[in-house]
Amino acid sequence: MPVHLFAQAEGDPTVVLSSWQVAANEGSFCQRSEAGQGNLYVINNGVWRRLLRADEALGGLVTLGGDVTGPAAGNIVSRITGVGSPLTVSIAAHVLSFEQGVSGPGPTISQIRASAGVNGTSTTIKAQDGGTGNTSGGPLILQSGALSGTGSVFNGAINFVLGAAGTVAAFDPTSPNNGLFIDMPNITFGNGQTPKIWQQDAAVSVGNSFFIQAQNASTTGGTLFLSSGTGATAGNVTFRLGAFAAGNFSAANNALNLGVPNITWGGGVVSPKISQAQSSTGDGNLLAIEAQSSIASGNHTGGSIFITTGSGFGSGLPGVVALNLGLVASVNFAVDAGVSVISFSGDGFAPTIQQTNRTSGSGTSMFFRAQSTLASGSGGGIVMVTGAGNILGNPSSGSFDWIMGGNVNSSLSINPSNTWTLFSGIGATGSPITVGDTTHNNEYELQWDNLVTTPAPDVGAGAALIGGLRVDVNGAAGFIPIYVLT
Image (cartoon, rainbow, N blue to C red; front, side, top):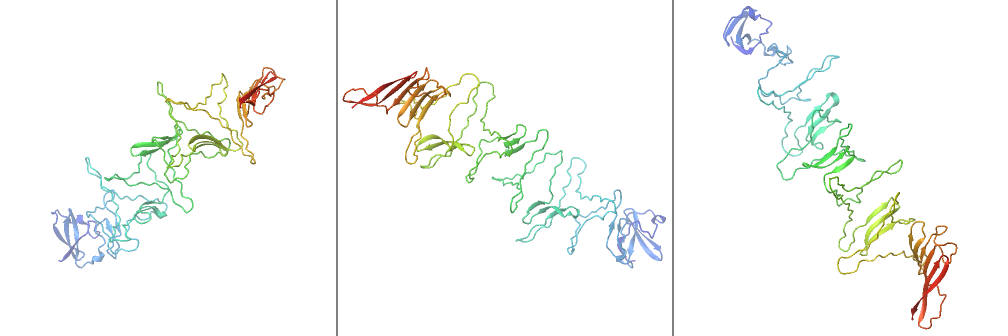
């Protein structure tokens, strides 16, 4: 009898195998008359299995075994229950391949929706475990379809979809993503890890750049935040140059610590600035620039601070160092006509160079010292020049006053009329005494006056009176004339 070698599993409901089973070798055949039909059985894996007769329709073959079922009217498998615990379907094939003509959303491996009120269970795709001993597990590979040809074609993307939320992450080679696309706000690492995001090493002379960029926008781009962990003391934000620690923002000492010697702005940057944000309440806070101190044992010198302007090129001059007092005044260090100049700017201010007052003890000396020379030659002089005036076309130079002490009227005054006066003593009102003053004692005055022409003793021809010294001692005035020979 011709038969088709389609074996039916031992779960055949039309026959009770145990009622006639006999001991036989694997592959042995046995013919049995059942319901007026001659059925042929074969031993397969130690079990008698009925073979399909030629007069049976192939389309009715829906029960290939107790773990595989399908609709009675066709050869479509709709359910695989598996065997064992947990229920398992063993597949000996290396590849499960869907037909080329499958259309619609494409082939899908999915789990049927859970019953009402029941949470869905997990579905796992798992690679092979390593065998016993020291072995590695197999890798899990998700591979998209490969492109074909050239031009605007791409390898297929790999999308990760969260339920009905749509794609939340994808490895997408198309523009503008061209990489790992993430449509979720957070990437979170486990609390027991030391996470690291880095680029793979390459055997090349120059490595590729690595960018971290916030979102672009038509008006204002997004802000990039680098945040350390919070705690009783916040963690540091550290910057490294290769294996070298370039610096960090430290909460422990509330500082930006730099491990590099220079901070450099690009040549195209206009007017770089280091400043503190404005205060909307109260006084502004102190901003300090401090060189390195030495705390090593022994006698050591602290570090210096250098403020250097840019050098000029050709006949150009060096830049100016300006110490600004807010927006109203400044002290400027510059080179003008080959001369180093310290100048004060700002209207309505009387610039003063002074030492701060002491609260106890005597004041210390303050020096203005010109340049000395170690070679053969003269030392430098000190020149003090008063300002020249030009008020409504009538120039009037400022006077030169040398005052000793705040309330002690010991002073030297030289005014634009070529008169100089030397005072010594304390006036009743704290103001300098005047020539001929007879109201104070212990006050002295020596005054040069080129306008004084009397008394003019007769010295004869060949001499001319040019001025004299007017002397006032305790209010008694006298005059010492000065002549030049003509």
